[in-house]
Image (cartoon, rainbow, N blue to C red; front, side, top):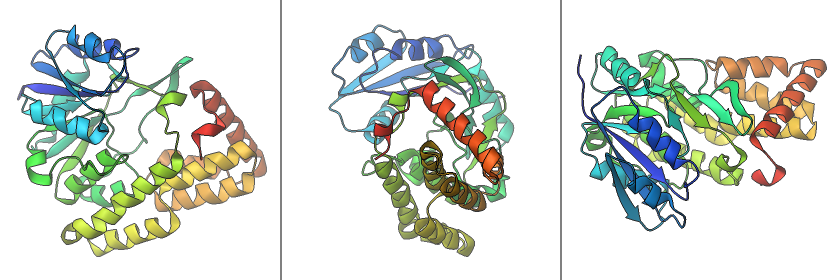
Length: 323
């Protein structure tokens, strides 16, 4: 089994409250061959100083330029033949990297992106929910399925040569830059495999949610428009039709967001329509299919609305987070 050197790429902006736990989690990995690059993206707190105090950690300081530019800087400075992503507020458990490398090796194809699910860590503690949708598309179905819903998380491991083939992250995208990268890779023949046992904690709080949903939705549309313009030679006709549909009707994530907002307002009829449409566009997403099914009747819609309020309370959601 191959045991490549792995560099963790950790972009950080004003993360002094969480980056210590993030770096401690990486440094306690049972997999020995690793180092860390932290990109201090113009922090005004003690993020850089805390990171510098940790061993096997290189800190790159730059003016605030955004997540894509920060990751690109880390990738350029990495010494590992494999790259692992971990954000500065997430935590990987000790056997995380052993599992990810084993998963990548098990795929039997170097043009593979290993990804990991994670347990959600909220202000009230660990929730019973996970980060990723509960489905794994077959390799041949992955490009089309990824247009419907993302199944590659920010917790990932892949060969750095991916960037030689598909390029770096697009710094013109302030959001959705990771989705753009993975879509470019999948359309060019790369494939994803999931580490079956979550060994990470994904911090999910009100502060970690976007405060401008309109920007997120615009970014997602931009990724789809880019695919039509820049990856047209790699797209099948079915994929082109789906992209055009998503640009017209809305992506499943946008429709789910609309449905959740309707549940918050108590507009159960609108929530039902949005979730049904989202489920139609992402037929392999079992979690979404169950939500759409639950929204079919008045009684179950009320239960769904109650669960939405409970989830909002757990993560500190408030109305200002959606504009």
